[in-house]
Image 1: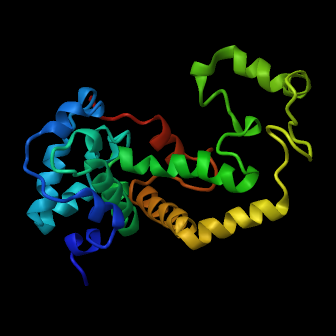
Image 2: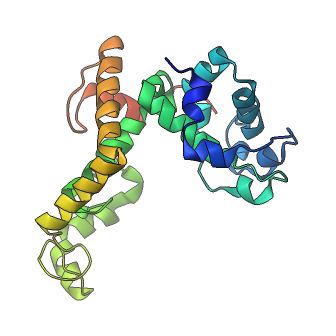
Length: 233
């Protein structure tokens, strides 16, 4: 079996992202996430360059690789044309591929993203759909969103959209053929397989944690990862 560094080295984002790091720390200095988290892109690059198998596995299990906002500010400043953000993307992909993502709080939240955005893309053709917005899960939206959901049909006509109707316009019903094409794109790019792995590894972790899991958002494990914030940052 290939080691972690060899697997990383097959990812085009890793190939493009790591040239010749001189450990200057510019990436950390410019990184917005470093101002909010105990997060240091330079440290991650050091671990990757070390090729140390144990350290790399711990990195794949760590919260730190999920702190990056993928703004790519690091790319614009690195004097050696590295892109730590690309390396982070490769690490995240491998963490998901091998199931290590469930060992960190932020990694486990990939299930929430998959079910709240990914599933909606395949179901509706939109990453956010009004019908799926649960204001109990987003209390910060306040009563405005409750009012919007209640009056969405009349508001749609007023603003010239086409809510849940066939034809042109925003929030229209996406045709079955277009949704099938979208599903094929997910299949061909590996997104479908990745979604399946997120579900499978998350189910295993839920069992390990003695939390009930299931489909959708109304189960113990989903609520745990969605509401959980066990560590102070």
